[in-house]
Length: 436
Image 1 (cartoon, rainbow, N blue to C red):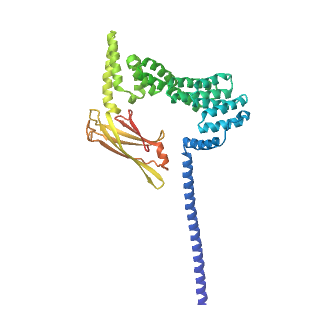
Image 2: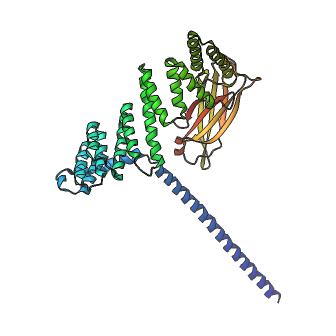
Image 3: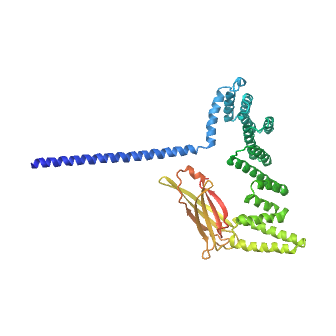
């Protein structure tokens, strides 16, 4: 009886042990599968990101190598006139990818001749090939030769060609010709009953940049009156632009002090931290002198009073960019587990000629143009002022908590440094890339 109980107890232990080992095996298998799944998903994610960051230039290079190999094996233009539209288009695309725009032009001309009425794809590709060869007269002839009537595809064609033409002129520094092309693009695009806001804004931004760039060149050559004309054209498309108003205020400060002051005052209401107070102050004095010569002493006193008030405002509220030298001592990134973190060290020197008793530094961590993190540090107080023309710099260390998942992504991140006495009037000192 005792032996039977011992035997039964032994059997019970064996069963418990078997169950325990079975559960242990299941747990280990589950853990292994989780680890393998995590690794595979992490690897797949990295590969996906790598593909996403394959640049357009890399893709063009790949296409070009294939195209060069194909066109080197045979003369694709031989008897091309006897081929159909699709073949002509494919041959044109191959030569275009290979960078042989003359042969691409030949193929696209044949394709355009064979294209159906209302199909402007071949004409657009032909225009692109002509633009690449700087054959601008032929592009304009092509645009003029196609009947201008209410046709959605034709409007789209002429819009796209004029945008491409403007882009080419802009890249060559021919800003007024670029503006003319963009004006034409806008003219045709405005014919669409349903417009894409992104495309419309893209054309307008191109127009604005062309007129501003043209004005900048003209000012350097001393033709300020003409520059005002183009700046006002740019302002017509972007009436709230701080940049354009500021440029007009500067250019007009000699030509028309009263008009210049109007732009300066508009800026003072919206973005006073962007105003060049020295130029504004000189413009106020010029206006006061003009009114004194005209015998309008009341107005002269008004502008002198504004000049005095401006000095007080600047002293209490404003930071000038040129009053400080900022050196990025180091911008480093380190990997922790699966993410990257960024640390930076800056030295700030006060070269303003005046001791600063109150000032803050604001570091804005951005991905492209999107702020991801903001860190503010005091860099001058009454107890620890930032002394003028001192050889000793104020050292600032900043560490951002934002997680970055791949090293490639670091190329899209930057640090913007602002200095200010009053948080309403921040001055952008500089922008620093994480990876140059």
